[in-house]
Image (cartoon, rainbow, N blue to C red):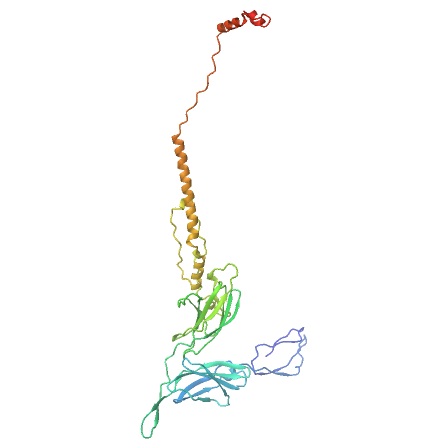
Length: 414
């Protein structure tokens, strides 16, 4: 394998090398004349990594009522990524706690180990993993196995007989995963989980369910779309409040019981955003996991009720309803934004009183106009002007007996 390197470079990094592999490297210089002789050879060995493949052909066999034999083969050689140091065995009863053991690896083609001190007629689940110095590889989940039934006969010899029970069982729903809270930042909640036993059938997906802490669980409000290999997710744009979150694992046999409940509190910071943006967002997952069944928010939950006008004060208004299904969080938000009846009734009552007062005033004004008759008052007539003869008589009378010096004009007129 050869790669061309630009002449200005004096160092290079090789990527995509396989773990626990030895590589021999040498360098050539090239000009327009030709290629140089090879440089000295450098041998490099990459470090080990955790195995990329699980153990193969894991089998369980009931030996006695209190023991089960486990056999398996090492992972494929190209997937071991190093020297196998030991195998990790995990076993438990159905709905019991896991017990973990380490079994040293050998050079044999087939490994084996016997579990002892088990309970008779009890179903057990076993997981086997290979490991190197870098860590554990992926698990192989063996089909469940039931220990033998112990039968004690009462006789002189007091012999004990065993009856073989079947080891081929129908698959069960998976065990509930273990849910953990990673971080709460602003309106984002980061969660992670650890899968339990898959029930004999590989886990197909996970479903997340959450609610307000004061609400009740609703199985129809689950967000699916989380792949079987996904182990974490982030919920964004959470509205302020206290939430309860739990997780379900699904396989071909059905859904697991709910996981442990994680309680999350989102602090109140400003006006809450639309709940329709509350989307469980999973980092590095397909689009279905990023937008699992987004919950719509009704427009009536965030639209203030219009104040009625006088012309519509006596007209009943219908309350708009939403045709979409709400999550418990959306129902709680809609209730918190719904106006109290008194907030609407008081303005309506005031408007009606104002309209009534206006009508009464207008009626009284019209009655006043129709009932009062205005009669014009007679104007005083000026006295008629005196005639010429009467004027002369009066002037003559005034002149008679008067001093000519005081009334010379009047006397002269006469």
